[in-house]
Length: 169
Ligand SMILES: CC(C)(COP(=O)(O)OP(=O)(O)OC[C@H]1O[C@@H](n2cnc3c(N)ncnc32)[C@H](O)[C@@H]1OP(=O)(O)O)[C@@H](O)C(=O)NCCC(=O)NCCS
Image 1 (cartoon, rainbow, N blue to C red):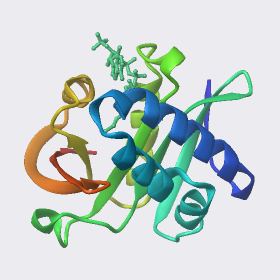
Image 2 (image 1 turned 180 degrees about the horizontal axis):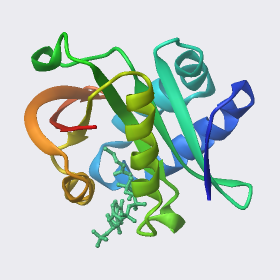
Image 3 (image 1 turned 45 degrees about the vertical axis):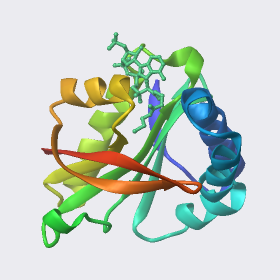
């Protein structure tokens, strides 16, 4: 498996994997309207392209024998209030294809993200995770993240509570 930076040629790929994995993980927990409106906002090709070309954002793609199996998106600037002024990197999205979950790919992406943070002179990595996503929370805890705060995340018109988790890198 390799992990590589995304390029302008990856917009359709990232939109496809993002939509597929988000749907698989969250469709059964949310109303169809809210799900579709969030997918359009976050995983349409236009949304992915906007993020891909933003200076502060970085996408990384995990490939197994040439086929993309997972991706992560990072933000070098965005910070929750309690981390303002600190040297942080945000893990905004991490999604592994449903058929590949539980094989350690997410951990490899996280390690790559820690290294990415260090090479950008960051010493804290943080993320927001839905409070009703216990599998992901357990995964982050296993990787040394601790919950330090929370914020509101809008999924369509529904306000959801995200835990803010962080660790030193
Ligand atoms: C969370 C995630 C990135 C972890 O990556 P991974 O490669 O599966 O990591 P691991 O192989 O270490 O496995 C993590 C554990 O979480 C489980 N898990 C996490 N999300 C899961 C899901 N949606 N369905 C089934 N199992 C899931 C895995 O089966 C595994 O179980 P274990 O604790 O018994 O070992 C990945 O499982 C994923 O993409 N999940 C769905 C989307 C998601 O929740 N993303 C995070 C949003 S904040």
